[in-house]
Length: 304
Image (cartoon, rainbow, N blue to C red; front, side, top):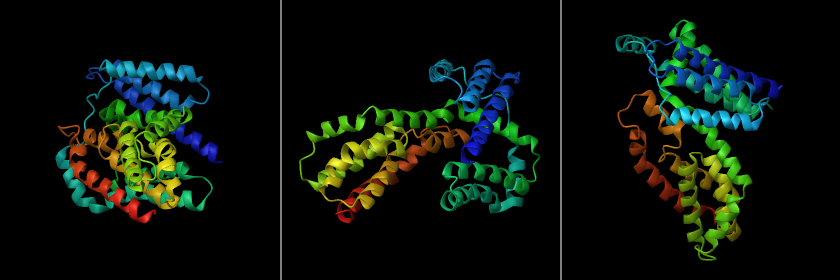
């Protein structure tokens, strides 16, 4: 059952991407309609047929999509958002109820992950579908706008929309390649043996810095915990539960500071059409640095 539902989720995601490509190809005012259309259609086909397509072909398609992006052949078209006046009027009518669909995604995903055997990924997909239905009920908009606005937002976000998937794959690749062991050997010549504070500082900083590179704290966690956490923190008597969770959340301090975490920092800037694409990162930087210091202090005193 779980596999079937996940396959349906991937197919729906692929159809949204293909729809975006078709919107781009039929947009007469689109400056890069062929590149943009091909990019999103290929992305959708990979989502739908990924298990059936040989890995080397998927890799080749991703390289081709990367070339299209590097040549600036992927961009937004002429699809427009609703007018400012209309959105202001609707916001007054709907009020804070507009946040219910977004909350529903998290609540449903958590409930399914916690109380069923379907897992969090299925919960996230089902939560998204239910949130979409709630959105249509609350806003009383026509379903036909779903495809149009999905295409508009995906084209506005651009190629950064696929960065999370690529970074997650890169994290798995690093782990299989034994990067954690390489880091452990390197740190062994730098971190003083038996110095708990040095181990904690290097572990937290390593998580933040590697997350900035990877853009994903989950991907960094396996590599940095194997390379730094286990030999320099856990082996010195740290409580694995406390040190582990603080190490993971220290990585999220790096998430706040990197454009590689596109879904957190770049996509919102694109959606809000901010002049400075790194404006979200600059605003988050003081909090991220302060939280990283707090993580180091908490791990040093709580985990030992």
